[in-house]
Amino acid sequence: MIAIIPARSGSQGLRNKNILRINSIPLIAHTIKAALKSKLTKEVIVMTDSKKIANISKKYGASVPFLRPKKLSTSKSMVMDTYIYCIDKINSKSKNNIQNFVALLPTSPLRLAEDIDNAIKIFKKEKASSVISVCKQDKPIEWSLVKKKNYKFSTLFNKKSNILNREEYIDTIIPNGSIYVFNFSKLKKYRKYYFSDSRYYLMPKNRSIDIDDYYDFIHAEKLLEIKNKL
Image (tube, rainbow, N blue to C red; front, side, top):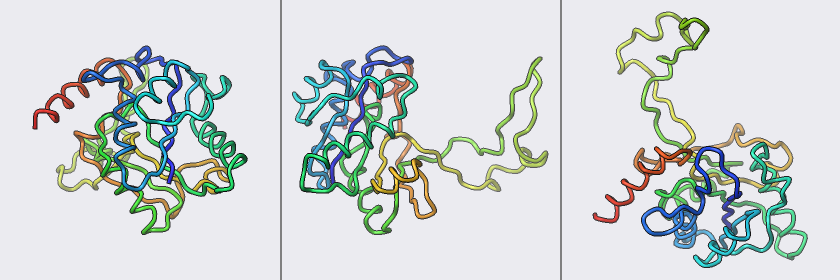
């Protein structure tokens, strides 16, 4: 199975975050290294619109067969379109028809190669249309409030939902943005990530950081430092 790492040059939350150095190497390199260590991925492809990101990616062992078009690299572009563009272009030039792939976002530097392999194993075992990596939510979703004007708010669920003992709430999970395994034809045809036969892969909180801003970056850096000392 091929691994695709989408990495556009623009970033609103943290400027140039994909190539910022974290624990001595660029952020994107952590994802490339994990993907290369995976036993179930045969090629690691970085899709980027930046020649600088492309050169860094190649330095760490990834393939960059072509650059990502500018129209797929804006802040409003859907990453799904990049996956479809990438695989359609590869399939048009190769005799090997790619049917499934794993997408790895470069903003999740703490995932391990075994996380990638475990998600792929679930995908194959369950014959799923997709597998999404998740982590447990910290707080019960029933505690959520809807913000309104003039400091007012309302409960998101029924009035009794926020007065139960914590043990009475259901366990909820949330995508952590780290790993997505897809059946390509399903993704392209229906243009969605979740299907009735989709499955989840649960990751621990300490490997589920998705870097969006400076606070996330510092948090991930500290966790990597701790991990390297173990």
